[in-house]
Image (cartoon, rainbow, N blue to C red; front, side, top):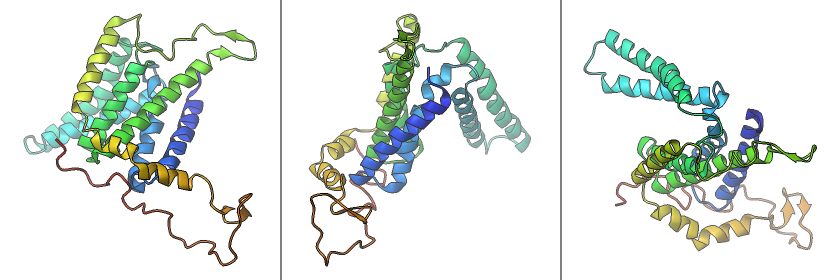
Length: 274
């Protein structure tokens, strides 16, 4: 399997490449682009949460511990005393970080259900739910984050599968075939639980209409095609072969080629979409 550094490096490169295409196509506002790109980077390391004491696993449960501890704190802020709130906050923080972390690893094993396409779908749906309902992002932005998450997750699984082939020694390792799978056939219970979780997450996701309309938009693909290659010169210096530049043509106005203030997908959350 690939190590953590390789996973996050390749995941960042792939997510950055997708972000560049998304920005050029003017799909979302730049501030939303940062958020969805981070979903792709996170997805590139998430499959290793079932690897005990791995950095992705520790980081994930640390983040969950902080999140849930403050949710509990704010939920009981007007009902309990300061000392009681401290105890409840600290108990939740420690409980999620260490107790839930320990229970999770007792019930899971590496290269199990979390190394599957089913898990990739669950985390993609979960990302859409988080971006919509917790971060208040537009429906289209939430689904774009889900797409980035899914791609990042699949990049991780693909890398693990590639590393199962020892090219130099011309052999296939025993781990080949365990990184990318639809579900975990060895543990049907795990697969059933993940399928139920994926369905539940999908039921909470926002409408896909805005995202699909944006992806099918002729303007989006036309804008991407127009900006794919330089019109006249590379970096404004080296002339593009086979193209002539008018002597009176401006070298640059300092303005973007298209309006990137909001993008094709609005940066404002939709108030009603049902």
